[in-house]
Image (tube, rainbow, N blue to C red):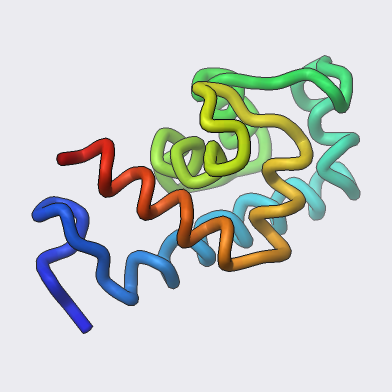
Length: 114
């Protein structure tokens, strides 16, 4: 179903699919380059697995792995768990495994866009 998309404050089924694709593509690139998300955090960013990162650090990591999507949008998708302006390793792991959290993030994004 299509109701005008996020620009009009509504979600489309495609928005959920797009979010899932973006997260899976990013995680896949991390896994290809570093072998694990934790190693990407450590080797790619010089951070501990418990450290949180902001959009700028996520963008830097995206460049390192060759992510061609919008890292600002990716960061918003991943912020579902913490409701903060930062993300952590667990946010990537959970987002990869469950579409429920991804859809929750999109709902939050829609509310923020109003």
